[in-house]
Image (cartoon, rainbow over all chains, first blue to last red; front, top):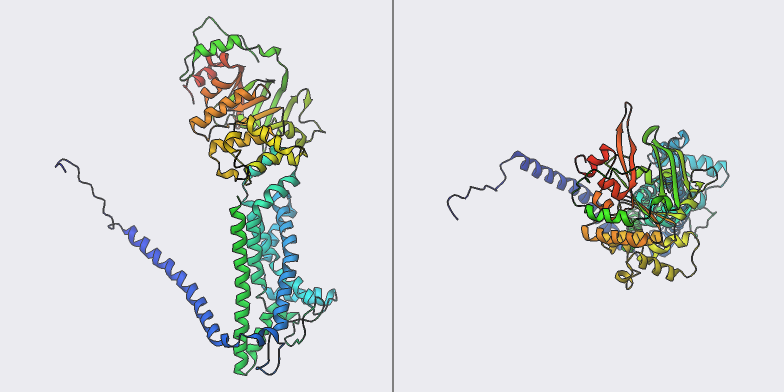
Length: 293
Length: 291
């Protein structure tokens, strides 16, 4: 190296911003740890207490006052039914509303703005309020009774705003240039929406819907309010009395016998497994359809 | 607004444009007046939310010609080209006044369906915007929505051939259109338009997002296509207009007391616009004194 080469100094670390950067990084790690540790503790605790109770008896037997033969079959089945009904109700209504708001609604009209504001507010309403509404309107007002269908309808109302918001985000994420290209080829509005916008938004809609569903099947309060019974010894039907897994868990934890607490932990493992499967399904759906592009 | 050329003066000098070539083209070019008129625009004004973006535009677009709109940013040339296939309808605040006759029919007449208009008048956009579908499905989309599904495979092949893309994609028609390069994507978008057999092809800066080689391919393609189609192109690139256009319209920005709006300054054959412009603003622009 010749002596007239100007001195180049590249080493950093003298400026205070480096410390701010490191501090921020540590803060982020702490945030992450808070979430992970809580969840980890919960899962470990539940597995330690409940894993020995996860067996054929739990899956196949109806509940009983004798913990040795008590199971959660009616509750598991009812939760599955609720999940299926929930998808059948929320996806068409939610996606339809989202399409209207994003593609058809004139945002300058006061009623469309009111609708939007309401949906956002509804997403923040506590679930117990939906339970009260369900009790007053569906169970008593319409005379539906304390049945599975009423439970499914209440959960539908509960997650509909979330599904609408998720579907709107997915539809909005479809680039405007795709719509323009389709219109420029002589497509009608319906053809643009059904053949371009919806297929492109599908992964986002699927993910949002399934995440909303997995939240709903863990809901307890509104179901207890409309009278989801905890002692059901038979398989649930659409228009019959029912219980659900979270309600069963809640009830078992209230019993003094320690073995029931173990059963509750076992039922939590089942519920966690169901939610995990749903979420995995959402991720699988999203990846599958994104790869097709 | 065809004006007399002042042939006795020296041609103006433009960087990157061969003026001798232009003069030769002028001699060989059929006079526009003998051509069939495809669009006859008179006193057009376009406003966004009551603010005029373009006003007092009158010109004729001739059949089997390439007509270029040039001018600085914000002069309303993109707004103008979108009037020809009623794409401005999609913008809620846009309003169009004046008349646009298409083969004598008023495009903005009370019973005109914008969907019918767009079947006949195709459009290629500034950024290549293929659908997130296969190459085949991209080209087949137009025919499918318009119900032209007889012999769809041949139709798709013909369109891809016309767009000079067939040889590059014939072995992977099922592949995603997004796997193509930018230049190929833009030719795919042209093929997509051609598949519905339009009468007119509108191109809004079709090469501005492409590299020079891809741009040359698009320009060559336009020379081929004007035998069968009438082409209207918006371009930022003056040399491009000089190379490909038969007629050129120069737009400028008129700074009024309330708002800036685009105006048509001069419309003539391309050789005249580039060698003997009559308006000082045109001359300043084509010689690069104003950009």
